[in-house]
Image (tube, rainbow, N blue to C red; front, side, top):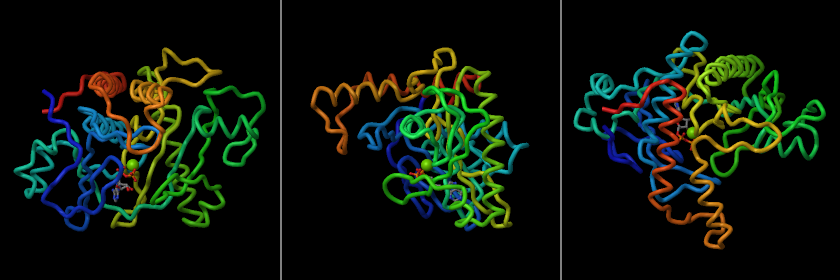
Length: 307
Ligand SMILES: Nc1ncnc2c1ncn2[C@@H]1O[C@H](COP(=O)(O)OP(=O)(O)O)[C@@H](O)[C@H]1O
Ligand SMILES: [Mg+2]
């Protein structure tokens, strides 16, 4: 069964945030409800149309990872099951359809203002910097690396969480200044541990997680825990392992149908690359939805069922 697609939510809880993709609600003072909509952005522009099932795919991929990695790091997930959430938050009783698949009840934290990026393959802005100057985030890398080549060990490259616009890369020294030495060390270690395990698990399932971004927070007990979404196609680069060819850019596992369409609109002079985006034909939103569902299927080995 599929649920209706959703672009914004309206739940009877105090809404404390609205990101590009997620609506965030407070549940008492110790929990948050993250509601992932079907909104999608590409080239930093949010599309007017939604991608059916995308919110459920992102939420359930994160939930699957939290279950896989519970032994590696402490994390924020309490539940991603609609009935279970309603049992714990009775105010949501009349809103089951809005929660199904896409809601996650989490421990609330004070979010550290640093995005913890781990790169296991040389791609995107990292490849651009390396090609231009042989460095990544200012640090020298070995000579002769190819585009999309595997980096061993993976590289930790933190960025600031920008309220608006682009995140900005910072050095590890700057990260220590912002968070303190000990916290910076814990965040880097946890990021590496989660990525290393996750990358290996995903690769065995046919998906290369080329790079990813983690967020951490401090819970009410003072513990540092993994929060937000984890190793989803939105927070990471997913590539098809069977089509991987270093020495060139790799197609995005999930967003390629959308990117190809936007590129063709740009080449045709119908879009200037900025908001507002061009309208998307149904073939494009459907093809993209299928790719997200396929990402879930490959990674977990199961069909995503939302009831
Ligand atoms: N456990 C948590 N406690 C508090 N805030 C959280 C928690 N998990 C995630 N968040 C915050 O919720 C927001 C998620 O919304 P999202 O749409 O992903 O925002 P963005 O556009 O900034 O990526 C992020 O700002 C993230 O820091
Ligand atoms: Mg986010």
